[in-house]
Amino acid sequence: MVMLTECFAKFSEGLIFREVDKARDSIQQYLSIQSLTAVNMSISGRELDDGVMITRGTECKDWIEKLVVSASTWNFQN
Image 1 (cartoon, rainbow, N blue to C red):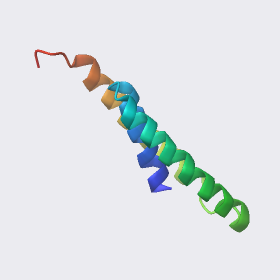
Image 2: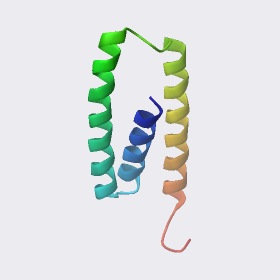
Image 3: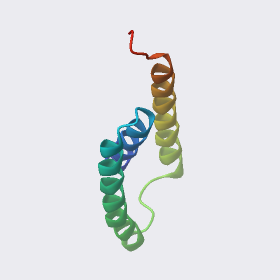
Image 4: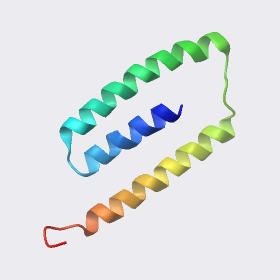
């Protein structure tokens, strides 16, 4: 699951900073990992607690919001 979160964060970062190649590569990696874990989760049942997933999602959202703030203050003079 950590790999999925990292790929999604890299994808979001690529979109924020308009790095299309990075975003494309990250989403391809994300989708390939997600397809593998979806099969694994369906076979073994739900492995992770919902609270863990909510916490991870909140942390990722906060990290992306920090990137948005830093990107909005960036300009060519900095």
